[in-house]
Length: 476
Image (tube, rainbow, N blue to C red; front, side, top):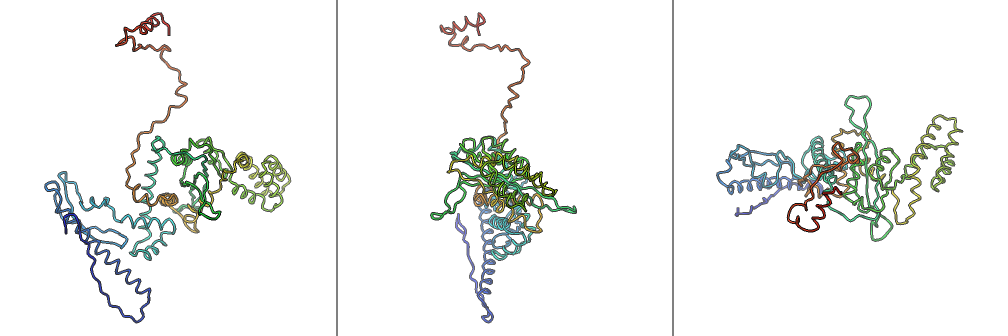
């Protein structure tokens, strides 16, 4: 081995196999297994050579050699077993020069490329299906629970990373960007089943999804197909969802500088109240998909009335539409139908501004909102709402964040740079509330100060003399 290089040698392999009964697929499978086996042996030998090189080249007197330690490591070629030298420093702390040189973390047992593949496949298929897919793609046995734990661990890192970034944005510590003329935001929620662990009824977790974009652009050089421009997705839970979405929108779009902000939603109270609290300059519009859905739910047997009310609402005659619904409520003898009509009346009343705003947006260049449903399906429904599937909260949140990272086209960046980036967050200093400035002081209203110019190098100048005279007569 040369001074600063190692030689990786691939052994020559000869295999004799009977031709009778042989198929193309048999040869492919056999060669794949042989190549995997060779790769594992070569990998183990390369690690041993690097460890020996580091042992010989280490600075003497600082680290004491305490012998070899074996370690199993899961790679894209399967499990490998190799030995590396353990050292102890003067403080009796253990060191593995091989791990430090190759950026192997303490207790790491799986290569990043293997973990990346497992997490990506888990965002698409069930863990049990991933086991079969891995065997087909890269070989090597791996149980579904081990894959699930790997996903939870990675998702937890992504969540911690995002929380630190949100703190940075809150502290106004983020790069300044040119704001688009118009920004679009949409939000919606759905439910996934939780593992019930002995409970009779299954609990559900409300998962919220927000998308932001700056308009639409042509997907291809020809044709009418369009895609969302500068799109990002945020998935979360809890009451602070809209606050976090506003922080991400500020970082992505410089939202406070955007001239027009359009926020679409289905009319749920958490969305409308969140818009008031965190997107005060936004124009709220009710997503027509959800409005039409309410029509079908409440006026199932009344096709003609559906059309009449819909036409009134879509021509911005909301009061007339409500009047028709009110009359239907009065005339209905079916208690279930009456209840549905009351719900429809309430829904339209609460969201009349969102309906009216649909028609106030006269600018033809402003795209209508309506992208959230397809994103709900991409982010959640296709993976999390399959029949019979239930989740633990840590498992669901971890996989949701992995899914979000993939949808935002940040998957490769996560593994290459973001995963190891140390994000420093300063202490948050909230702005002084308005009440602070309204407090009555307990001290005297007179503030006694000394004018700096009365003493010092300028005290002899004529204009300072004028100030001195004014202060003597009590002129303030």
